[in-house]
Every structure is written in C-alpha cells, then in structure tokens.
Image (cartoon, rainbow, N blue to C red; front, side, top):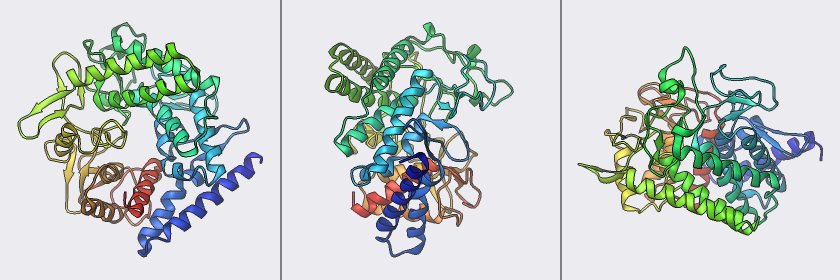
Length: 428
C-alpha cells in the first residue's frame, strides 16, 4: 500500500473498532464521546511517511513529543494482532522515535523534517530537527515502554533493528551521565518567559547531590523541575531499564550492555528508596515528587504521566503496595497543592495550567489505578460531565465551570479516556 492507502486503511480500522466497542454503551453521550476519542489519534494526528515510519503529532501543536506519541496509541495496542494496519502504524512510530532519540536524546519534541521550526529560539545546543529541547527523563522511557507493549500485544520482535539498539545506547549514556549532572554539558535557557519554562543557575538547574538516580531538567508537563531528581520519572526509568535489559539479552544477545542496564536500574532503585521516601504526619511513609539529594523535598503530584498516582499503571508497583497507597491518599487530598475540589469535579491539576483547573488525564489515571468499582463509575460520570459539551477530552478544566478549559484538541487525553472506557467495559 502507498501512504494514502495506509492512511485510509488506518482510519477505516479505528472507525470499525470504535463502532464495535462503542455499541456496548446504551448512553448516547458516552457512546459518541468514546467513538470520538477512540478515532482521534489516527484520524487527526497520525501521518504515514514514505519510508515506512509514522509521525504522530500531539494535536493542536504540529510537533511530535516522544512521550505524547507513545501515550496517544495506548488504546490501539489491544487490537494490534487483529488489525495489521495498527501494527504497522505502531511499528513505524517506534522506528521514528528511535531515529529522533539518536538525533538528540535531550530533546522532548521534534519536527517532521529538519526545518528549524521551534517553540522558541532557546539558548541550548541547536538542532533543526528539534521543536523543543527540554530534557525530560520520561521522553526516553516512553518509547521503551511502547516496545514492551508492542511485543506483548503482537508476539513479534520485528521492531528490534540496529537503530533501536543505537537508541538504547543513547539512553544509557544520557541516564548515566545525568547521575552526575554537574559534569553534563546540557543546559537550557529560555528568555522572556515564566520561571517554569527555563532552568535556573545559568541553565543548569538547582544544585543536586549524588543519589544514584538520574537528573531531569523538566517534568512531563514540560515545566522545570524544582529539584532535579524527579521521583516518578526515575521510577519509570527503572521500569524501562528492566525492559531494556530483557531486549538486549533476548533480541540482541548483548550480555554486557544488558548488565549495564541492570546495574543502572539497581542504582536508580536504591536512590529512590533512600532519597525518595518521606514520612508524612497524616499519611505515613510515602513518596516525594522531587528531591535534590541534599535534604530538600517537593511534596506534590502533577496530572501529567508519569505521576505518583500512575505508578501501578506504569508497572512500578502493585495497586496494593503500602507506600503507594499512602502516597495515593496524599495526592488525592488537599495536602497536595495541585488537588482541587469544586462543585463539578475533584481531582489533580498542574502548575502548568491555571489554579483550580483539573486535568482529564488525571481523572482517567485515577480510574485506571483504582480497584474500587464505585470510584471508577463516578470518575467516568465526571469525565463525561466536564467535556463542555464537546464530546472529547481536554487538558485542564475549571472545577466550578467546566466550560472554561484548555486545549480543545489534545489527543493524549482522548486516548487515555478511550483506554479507561475499554477497561470499564472489560471490568478491569
């Protein structure tokens, strides 16, 4: 098939799945919202390229984030075996991600071509492929996570090209280098912007001590870290390193590099347990959001994933893990500075969006990490009731007036809602 034929086949496949799965719900609003959200990524943000790769941009911004593009296809993963065109799309996306990682493992978002388009002309190492060069650990975690999902859902290993192994090498090098951030050449300065959009201390961020964890300049929200050791992202890195170790052994027969991944995973995990756990007077032993390894902690959670709320979904721990349960209770309480309660909804927002704005992604993730069927049902009702009549998800919305929202076209939120809806249908 040529590119146009692939595009048509992809849209036909997702529309067929959306109709078939959506028929489960009698409620017309729910059915239409599910169908709209399910087809969103394929119909509005995906391009097949002539070289067999796939470019998946985030929605209202024409750039491709390594994180968002991975999360945007989560609801298609269970159907990869049944629909080969979906498999081709995800395989092409993984190949594109591996290429981007090798171009610049410090960049979070990329252009379709090396055209020099960018969010801002920032003071950092320039590359015309980069839309933005905010270094975020999770940008390197998500493509490895997606590889694991691809193998799990297809039973195939045809994604493990030499380029993917090169990407693994790049990821290991960056994460090891950023265990000692003071020795890294990476810096980032944005001028004439809020403090959350740039790094302090001449672009290096606040000082950190060695912990074994790996440093991150920015959060999954693209906001600057207050302290450089972002705990949920290090947890995601630990999970990704486990997958990487397995792939290096089984697919590439590279024991030396596999051991390198295993050793780094151990160091990061020891750092999390030593420096990332705090004692709260109400909730007991729980995870901090950030630390600097020098005795300072940031206690909060952010709607963007990886988050502390999302840890079981990321396969870092079980839903019943005692420290996770304590942490979950904290982040879903008013002790979390970004937890909001209003007449229309209660849930987690982000310093990335205005005060009192709850995120649909956070509500969806709360449902995906809950074993309480009543809680899940209530969250589904809240999601539907706060769509401002648009029958799609948004970024953030005001907890008192959901018609006030950010980002009308945000495929990541739509994909997670569709995944949550499928999990409700299956009783998972």
